[in-house]
Length: 73
Image (cartoon, rainbow, N blue to C red; front, side):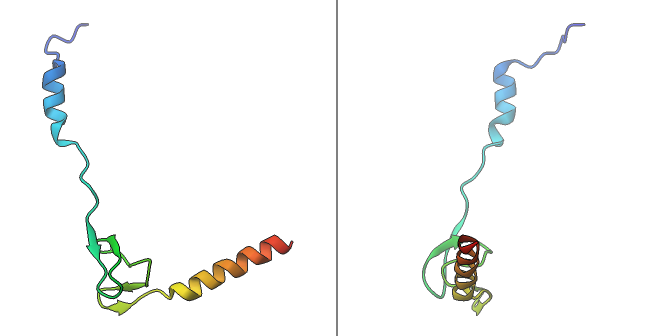
């Protein structure tokens, strides 16, 4: 069977004109001034919404300790 009411390329593309992705929203950290995604913890200092949520220094220390342990094996 043949599709009689076929959408032309222009009709199809006009319909899809609203499908484009927007750029990610970027906010400025209140604590350190670094740029980060909106509604997300700042990965530079670990603060979110005016309070400390992550201990970045401890996380980095644990990561380096794990890396050293795997390298020594």
